[in-house]
Length: 633
Image (cartoon, rainbow, N blue to C red; front, side):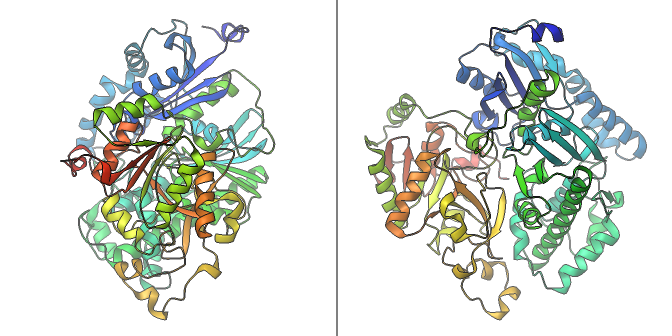
């Protein structure tokens, strides 16, 4: 199919399929005449976290949501250029030879068998779904262009600076660009092996967390460090002197003496790190000590500094009042909050699927706006073009009833949603934990009130209870607050909206409690269980919170539930954590939801209009079966 053939399609809708796959977090996104119809990550269907396989299930869902066949797809856009990535791989091994031979013989056969022939692999995957349009056009935008498109084209801005930061795409590890109307120009790139994303992942690995999964744990661990301690200052000095050189434009140089990601099978060379920092790499099962927290804080501070420097360069190059962020590092909510507080830009937008899953969205949008030169419409008074990011499968009554029949479950259907919201608000007020499944599933890593576990933030015991008895995860992990947008400024130092839980903001000073002078010297466990505010379950140890503002326009049911809770308690905030256990993807179907409900200490489950009480359910024999199914992250 030629370019003119595609433009000649006048009387039929044009469908574009965006795909990310084969590395991690594969996903599919479907556009109809440039409008997002459906989007989902493959992991939600396969129940394998960060699933990298070709997203057959996600594509099938997108087609079903649109009511079309695979043959109706005109353009398929893949989120990066595999041959450029292979070029980087070969050149890197050549540059470091003979080092890296084990990594070479491990990875290159996979490339020669599969990734080198990506068109073939894509067509194989599509053939398992249905008949393909023989004239389908395959497009391969560059990785960081896909990231840039995934944020700018859905933003509420007609023009904006664009900053993308991740581990690595083909060669680029970060980029600065400018979007205007339907165009995107890339002005500057940082190139492999120098990468802020890989730097942060290396510290994630050294501190005992899983790469490409545990970075958000490191971000949550950092506030337990002592900001004013000499140890943190020394760590920062050592990192800057030995590991990373930071230039005025935000670009960085990484000393490869300390890393193995370029040619090895691990992120770091442990011996130089041990010598530099004075302790061995932490085993994932070892207790978290003060040195771990302080090192985590040091790299978080440095990360924030680099992000701000890159943003300053973006401002200098573009002169824009607006900035859009994407890439895995854009999920660092603390750095995002610091960028907003800097007032470098008047407006900030971060796309919710900032990681590789969002590359599928960006690839599709790049195909529409850049390849096909289609105009972009920015509507005033709208948050963005994602409408809350509720783009996944919805909840069907037939599926709920099927679960009830399959498990002989006990459930009550409400005919009046207000009555349901009032009852749930009562349960939350009484200290109960509620699983809440409503409407379409969120696209991106955050649960935003469609696939969420909810609780009362005023309950001082709730953080420990949720971590240990519901999520089965590390006790230090913080929880996020969902707050009515109209009341957000009464609780948090937040100017504007944060619909995607991508900004960390301080809690209002009038809500904080006095802490002892020695508070900063307390260990992790002592800090964790010290009551810090009147919303203790969402207030982190540094008096911050990862805020989600809830909007009536995008999620009316969740908004009404919080309103009901407010009427009963005077509090417009709920604890919101993702509906899953540790190592499990967020639930997708009513059956996923019921299984998770029965395997945990959740008290009540709400799916659509159906209410499930734990005490009324039949016995569930294998309450720890999830440990066998999901690999702990």
